[in-house]
Length: 78
View 1 (cartoon, rainbow, N blue to C red):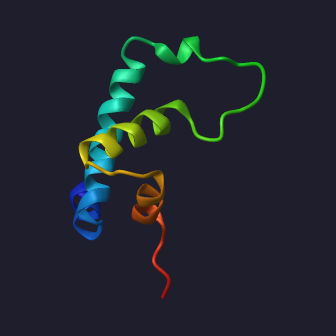
View 2: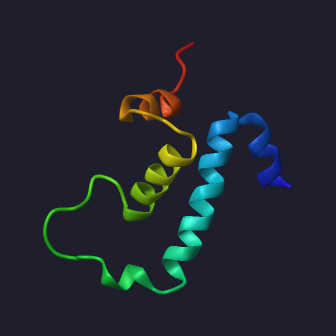
């Protein structure tokens, strides 16, 4: 019930993003890919799940530039 309520308030594109993120998270944890992450060295600015989800979001929504993705996720100023 809570998930449906949150989806109503979100933009439609963000609902697509959250659906993709759920699928990517499931597919990432199912074969235990998190065990193969590099634990030494520089930390990633975005987690791997976020990176894959944003790439899939860009491709499925036919977004041309990274700037357009930033505009989708930028909070609106009031």
